[in-house]
Length: 139
Ligand code: DQA
Image (cartoon, rainbow, N blue to C red):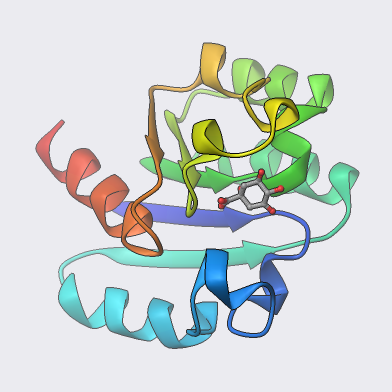
């Protein structure tokens, strides 16, 4: 089983960015631990700050891998294009957020991903990704 993790804008700064909200760990550190917890799975990881690149990655991976964990970050709340890309591919996509977007500003309550996602995991810190992996293992 191959799972692809796609992170959107500013998530390359995890560990340094607003640590009170997003924690002190870099994504690379977390990703290494995640991979060693699931040695039976194949993982790939992409991050981009560019909306069109995220769409390109969803299109490229979305017909071949078994599951996508997508944290579209700020584009979650604005991107019709990313929502359409998810609808266009075969692979199920789980929407991931590190913070509880519903306990934050109103503009973070709107998501163009949620209506087209298989499910949504919000607010468990970086372990939102781990919960996403587990849900693919059980489905
Ligand atoms: C985020 C929440 C978004 O509102 C925000 O723009 C992010 C990160 C999260 O993982 O909590 O960049 O997706």
